[in-house]
Length: 454
Image 1 (cartoon, rainbow, N blue to C red):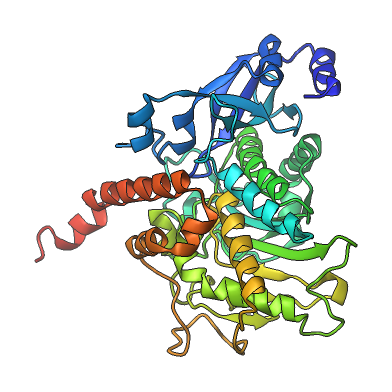
Image 2 (image 1 turned 90 degrees about the horizontal axis):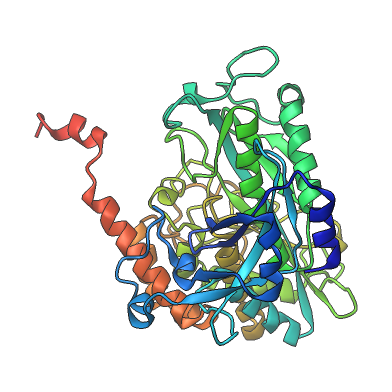
């Protein structure tokens, strides 16, 4: 931790506490709130979390039957400063700050079940080849009325802070709509600037009260994933400050578009050249081989892109999310898209992940598959033309069932090669446990449909 970080704390005497956190396997920030005078413990290695904090289930409970916890008695790990800084948090009633950390075991080695560490291993593989991924994410989310317990219907959409009119209709790319949210958006961009998050454009999206924010490209995938995790937390906090709820659920409304997390990436060599560019509109052989790897490993990686029960309600025909293992040039209906751009900006867009996914796991799965495709010079086949959101007998389908995705990920030699054994084992155990819990629940709709009918 730099002197400047502590200097900022010392210069802001109104800061009374600091939150310390990591990202668990579900993409949720977990940690502690400590008095500001104890913040130096992070630098000194004196702050500890139980290692199991990285593998808490989606309900916030210790993973049932966690074999590693049972084996070691839920040992503590050391909180390691990531170098990100002390990040101001000014959307709470009392000013505070947040310090991101990663986990080390008592032996000082990285904790292998932490998703951030898994992504760093992939980055090392690119660095060993003299390549550096340049990455950006596009995140979609809904704002909803906090007076409702759940955003179960479009009337839970927000109202204009200016006119009071309910934003209950699609208003795609409306500038006037965003003008109504000026105070919220101004606070949002100010908070991003204070936390060093390179946020770019924001648009109103394809459903009522749905929005998308683009993050700028950075040449460090771990930093890009950090930005995404911090940004989601920041959005929720600033939204609450303005009386809204914000959700990144993949499919909060059954009859509306879902929330995606599209990932754009390119590769640059040691001289700063984009290796996806060969001066043509089609891009280089390396680009096509990367696409080939992405397609080859897409189905068995789907659990990283769609990790929850609700995720698979987004991956349905006709709902503006990919359902087939396809690629295309300048066609948003392919799972993998090559955007129309200048040669120097030649890149790949991966369109499968939902906004509910863990960004570290998403980027690790994407970059791992791309690197394998490059190494194996894998042919992606022909790009599709036309509308790709329909069943296509010529293309493999992306798993549309959570259980199938868990099974494919568990058996995948690829998943086992890019994720540490401990992470792979615990993630599979977690998802099987969560699947079983959802299977046990009978919904109100099932009772209405069947109780007195069949």
